[in-house]
Structure formats: structure tokens, C-alpha cells
Image (cartoon, rainbow, N blue to C red; front, side):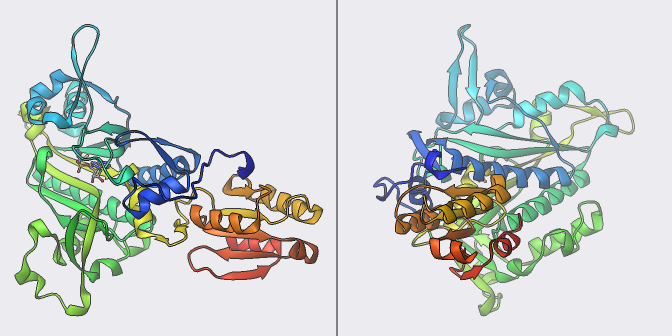
Length: 438
Ligand code: 5CA
């Protein structure tokens, strides 16, 4: 993408309404614009990040055996009357009436709808377990939408739902999802810690929140640094496939201390070695629930068990705040000059800075680099002064900057800057491309 014609409306001034770094930077770098309170339009740079996060979330869900579907945003009120949540959900639910006077709503979550789909089609225990997920916009009419996309009213969530024949199966699905979550967050460059949580309006008796540390987090959290040393990836020795691996994984996750202030236990905290204590404010980026037969019972969903008797399957639900993660990653990774994207979700791997547009050598070298990097690069071909280009490149946070000036172009070199460390080296264009890897 050429920056001269890109729709990336950066701001020089700090927007007055933004109280936290990620909100300020998302507005300043031109990622999003607010269209009404707590509702945002995603612009090209922001949308690329959102899509990259979605891709990683999707890959890890698929790897764990979950199947992607897409349920609508608008739901009929009848389903929620069946579960009893139509009244309970209160003012957070956006209620809509259609032209035939039917009560509809903009979904804040999908337990009812997925249970309805399930009961229509699944008949036997032999078809279980099933884990279904979708990545879809939600609406919650939050009293105080704030902090930009972190607490929006409309937001993108990945929500998965598991159906198992019995408690043991449901627990296995819960652990599988927990492992998928730890892998997902690791790939996003985040240290997310699973903490026991209350279940709130979703209900149930087992629940974990996944929390990352950031000064602007909404709750106080405490955990053992042991969590940060674990490799959750494919090389870490935990497999989705083996029940004994999942059991060991869950033991490790629940064996180390981690709690939000609501569940904090000072006696247990005192037993954690001082050099391993981590505490601070935390942002919730995911939340998983086991709630057994709460919805299958209230909505009359059954399958035939091995003995032919009808059984209510046991369920869990598993949410990731996909749009919140864009803000959360920035909270965890920025400096005074702007965003520092992890390579895995950066909107562009690299920006090419042409410091003298119109200089034949610079133009030719930039064109060559741009052709080689293709869609992975943003090309700053504007006629602005160098200082403005450096500032915008740091603000937008591309992992690599390839700086092309007339002197280097004549000598056949470029400067390659790594945003995360600030390290700058003079190299040949080929060496720069090789370092960037694409
Ligand atoms: N049905 C369950 C799990 S699928 C559920 O709705 N869980 S939740 O309420 O905890 O939401 C899941 C995740 O969505 C949260 O962990 C959070 O990361 C994100 N989220 C929730 N509310 C908002 C909001 N107002 N703005 C942005 N993200 C949100």
C-alpha cells in the first residue's frame, strides 16, 4: 500500500477524549474512528490487525478441533425467554422490534442460539463431543463504554460452545479450550494468565478469566511468575489429543497461584516466593465457563445416551475479546513514540521510507523493495520531510523500517531499523529483505 494514497488518517494532536495509551494511539495512528459512543469504524490499518488476530484465534480453535460456524447478530427474543435470560439481562441488551411487532435483539452472546441449533440436529451421544465457534459482532449496552475498543458497546468476540455427554467429557473440552487459549495468547505476544473467576450472567460453577498485566487494567491481579516461563506452543509438550496431557496441563495451570482481587487469598499469596510475585492491574482478554446442563435443560436439548435414555448434554462457553485484544496488545507493547506491533499481528511487516521522493536512485530502490515485499509492506512515498516520516513510522509501529536516502541509494545500501529495540544497521537491500523474511 502506498501511503500517499492510503486511508490512514493519522493525528498530530492527542485526542482529548482518550484517557489511555491504546485509545490515544489507535486514534492517532488512524486505526479506528468512533461513530457513536462505544461504537467504532475500523480503518485499513486497524482492520488488518483485527484480521490478523482473528486468523490466529481461528487457527488455534481449528487445531483444537472446534468447528467454525457463523450465527447472526440479530436473534429472536423467544430463545432468550426459554432460557429465562430475556428478563435477567436487563438494560445491557439492545432490544429491537421488527415490522411485524416481533421482539428481536442484537446478540450480546450466543448460548441460546447455539443450543437451539444443536437441539434441532444432534440426536445421539455418538455425535459428541462437539465444539462450535464463531467470530461475530456483539452488542452490550454498557453503562460506561470507555477506553476505546477495550470496553465498547459493539465489539468482536470469538465465542465457542462445547457439548459433551457427561461431566468428564465437558471437563476435557474445557481443558482443551484453555490450552488453545494459552497458545493463542502466546502467539499474540501476550503473557495472559488464567485466573479463577465468577461466572456472572453466563452462569455455571467453573470459570477462568485470562488476564494480561497493564497499568490501565480494570482489576488488581496477583500471580506466580511461573506462568510466564511455560511454553504453551507445539514444542511445550502439551497436546490437545491426549487426555493425560490435558490433565497435566490443567494441573499446572491451577497449581500456581493466580487471582484477581475478588478471589485473592492472602494466606496462599504469602507462600509464593517473593521473587516470583507479580501483581498489578489486569485486562481480561478471554473468559471461559463450564455450566453443565443450564441451557440444555431449560431449552429441552437432549440426545440419546448409550442406554437409549435421553440425556441433557453438558456445555461450556469460551470467549475471546478479538477487538479488545487490539487495544490490549497496544497497552502491553508501546512507547512514547507509538505502537510496537508484535510481528505476528502487525498490519504490515515493514514500512519503506523514501527520504527523497523524486530522486531517481531512491525511487528505483524503493520500487524494487516494494515489489519484493508486496502486500507485506507500506510504502511511504509522500513528499513530506524525513522527520515526519520517521515519526509516523514509529507511531504506526511497523516491526521493521527500511530507510532509503540518496547517499545510501547511490552506494547500494539502506538503513534497517527494528522498531522494538531501536537498533539501526546499514545493509544491502537484499540483506534487509532477508532479515525481514519476505
Ligand atoms: N458467552 C461467554 C463466553 S463465549 C461470554 O460472553 N463471555 S464474556 O462476557 O466474558 O465475554 C468474552 C470476552 O469478550 C471477554 O473476556 C472480553 O475480552 C470481551 N468483551 C466483553 N465485553 C466487552 C466489551 N464491552 N468490549 C470489548 N470486549 C468485550
